[in-house]
Amino acid sequence: MLLEAAAVRGTAPVVAVLSTGDQFYDNGVSSASDRDDDQWQESWRHVYYPSPSRGPLWDADFVGALGNHDLRGNVEAQVERHSCTRPAWTMPGRYFQYKACIPGAPGLAPASFPSPGCHGAAAGNGTAATRSQQLRGAQVHHGCVCVAVIDTTPLLKAMRELPGPQWARLRGNCASLDRIAMLHWLNETLRGFAHGGCARSLVVGHHPIVSGGEHGGNPEVGAAILGAMSGVASVYLSGHDHMQQVSAIPLEAAAPAPPLQVVSGAGSTVRRDSVPANTSLWTSASPGFGRLTLRKVGPTWLPESFDATLTLFDVDPKSDPGTPGRIGWTSSIP
Image (cartoon, rainbow, N blue to C red; front, side, top):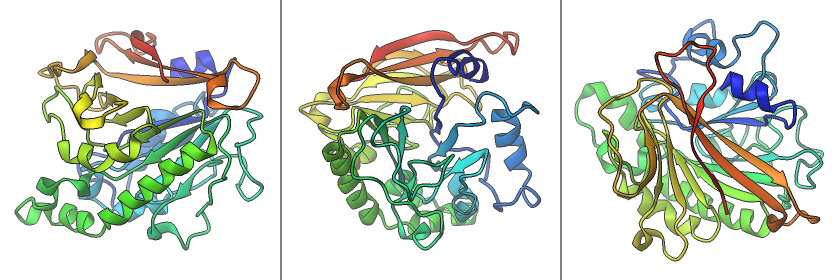
């Protein structure tokens, strides 16, 4: 990722890093402080910002979804960590919206947004509503990739009902989220994206709807979010299965315009027994990452004047750390 970011930032800014959850293994974090939990250093700063000269991702907002391993720890610590200073850990709530805009875009940021950093983050839940970092999104989103980040673990009955004292923290974190309120927020947020003229819209959550990996798909997530996504968000970006995969969500689940399901969760522990799903367009069990590029190709700021390309890279685990990623899959995103 660092090599790719360094290669492209000479021609275009790297605005954000989107993480699909489980930032911290195995049991989330215990505190928002580096002094009290060294995972902030080991699993975040030292990975994405290893250079003493700040490095190619320094100016990018780090935008993370919560995963089931995060819910095994102190979820509020990750929300509390939200900051617009560099490096910018961007998580104003357990679910929230984020806008990544090209330079000069009219939807970039109203005067109330701090600059630089977190220019498009807005919390969607009451958890962060009283904090000074709570931001309100603009009504115009021209020239922006609009992202709705959700917490998918509480949507799964199996996660909410895991038996035994070892899962008490996760059960409690599931119970503390109002699932109905989050889904109502998602519906309203995606409607706002559509009316605001986002160049592209996508949803980020931890659990995939369909997957050929070890964990498999989660139809409960699809039932909860696909209706809101229909006709608005063309990509659902997820993790959980430790592999990379691009799938077409079955038509009957999301008619008339099914979004792409992208699994990009190979950054931690790679599982070699992953197999392609029947709906897979591409899959890889190697470590990897993706890049979403937005370019203005027309004269207006309307969505049709923009080209968005999603490219997924994989990396040979045995290769030298200085070896660039290999392009595994690339496609234009409508």
